[in-house]
Amino acid sequence: MTDHYSVAVPFYDLWHDDGHVPDMREKLPSVLSGVRRSVLEIGAGTGRMTEVIAAATPAEIFALEPSLGMRGVLLSRLADRPDLMERVTVLPYDAHNVELDEPVEAVVMIAVLYTFSAAERAKLWQVLAGQLEPGGLLVFNWRERPVAEPGELERLDTYRVGRHDYEIWAQTLSASEEFSTARFLYRIRHRGVVISEDEVVSSSHRPGHDALTAELTAAGFEPDHAPEGLLAWRLRK
Image 1 (cartoon, rainbow, N blue to C red):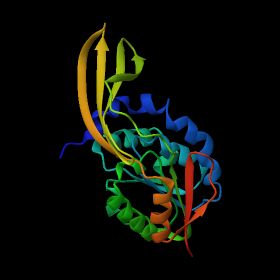
Image 2: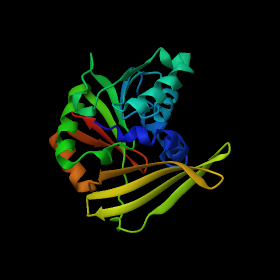
Image 3: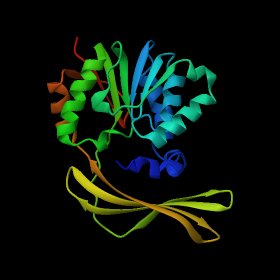
């Protein structure tokens, strides 16, 4: 099976360091301030958020990342951090198949929610409830956004790395209130000439707040406080 996420790996840190990562560096630590023992991170990617979690809490971290390409960068990042190698365990599973040795204090899921359909989320909440201790924290990023409109291919950003330009292009192909599909092009140019280009078509699911509330309540969670842009829930005791 094609690992679509690996196509984006060379661009991933460049783009997300301009996106959600700085915002989460500011907001996530306050939500995790009481966590001391263990955290399960769903969709660790290349490890940017793993480092944020590690800086916010002394807890042991279970970093789940099914993409081989992403996981390779994550492990390379850990190799440069002996302190993190001692307390970060990398799990090569998808979120529906994670099974830890003991329940964790918190589950963190950043820039991952939108990859799950409603049916997949229903299973996800049940799985995560099974990995959390009673009263445990579930936190993920979420914002209400207008429905995207299909349009032409547009360049999102360009990053200069040595003599090469790394370009990220995107095009919304279809969109409804919760579901959309988009096309991404990842281009590398040398002296203006494209020397590498990869294309990914992906789907996105953006549930409304009412839908999330109903799903999480049914799975045994209660809402908690979190800064704008994050939602926090606790597993009922």
